Amino acid sequence: MTNVLTICEASQEDAAAIAEIYAHYVLESSASFETEPPSATTMAKRIAKVADQGCPWLLVRDDTGEVLGFAYAQRFGPRAGYYYSCETHIFVRHDALGRGIGTMLINALIAACEERGYRQAFALIAGTEPAAVVLHARAGYLPCGTLTGAGWKQGQWVDVFVMQRKLGTGNETLPESHA
Image 1 (cartoon, rainbow, N blue to C red):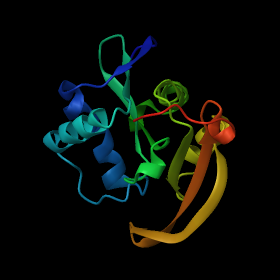
Image 2 (cartoon, rainbow, N blue to C red):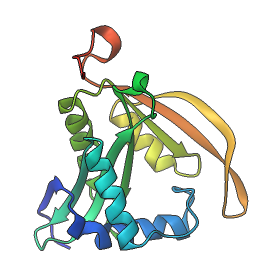
Image 3 (cartoon, one colour):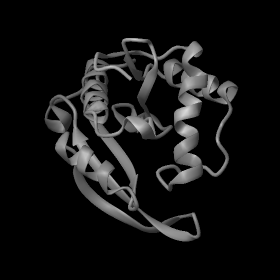
Image 4 (spheres, rainbow, N blue to C red):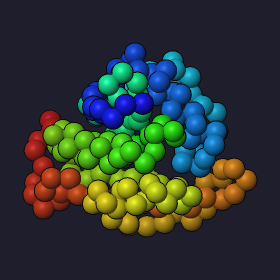
């Protein structure tokens, strides 16, 4: 791994690298409540779905082009009233942790969501992932609740922390029309 890192939009060609990074979290942690790692094909469909929603899916690459992490947002809920709210997700390759990649990704993701007109971002974080809570708190997310024992993973009940961050002017001004 090199020290020159860049952020770019994900494409279908990145699906295998993204699936590989994500598989670690599915198999080795409770950061994801999935129990079977999705294939590259499944991940490509997820990338397409996020793009179809008009949401960002970002990558961090080193100067060799290797993918070291990814972040994306998706609509928070399917109903029209949630149009300006999104849920954010960040995963850094497990052997690239501690290099500031998570910070790069979360800051770029926040900016990309604001550019798209989102006003609120939510993160649902497993209670077994304190570094993720700290990352989000440093990026301005505030705690708004705990879903006690919301998931079962790795032989234990896992709490989920709900965190929220205002994007742009948040709910202080009227939104732009999306009709």
